[in-house]
Length: 75
View 1 (cartoon, rainbow, N blue to C red):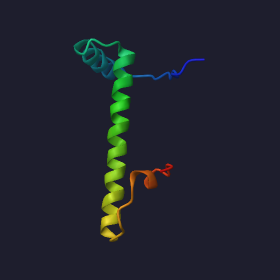
View 2: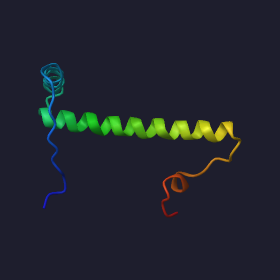
View 3: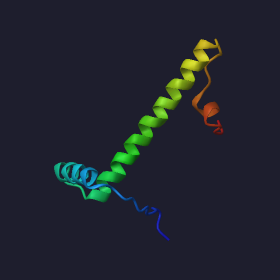
């Protein structure tokens, strides 16, 4: 069993062309380029969600919480 999982995605020709250009510039395969883009997008999405939560808590004058508390992680 592999540690990574495969997902089939259908792209229109224009998006595929952009992926091809980007992957060529970075000397990556198309699948590696898409994997990198998804990873970076997820990191950005997580950051945006955390910023939104911080802004909500600041408006409500709630105290800040730790990273562990937010994600329900053991300390």
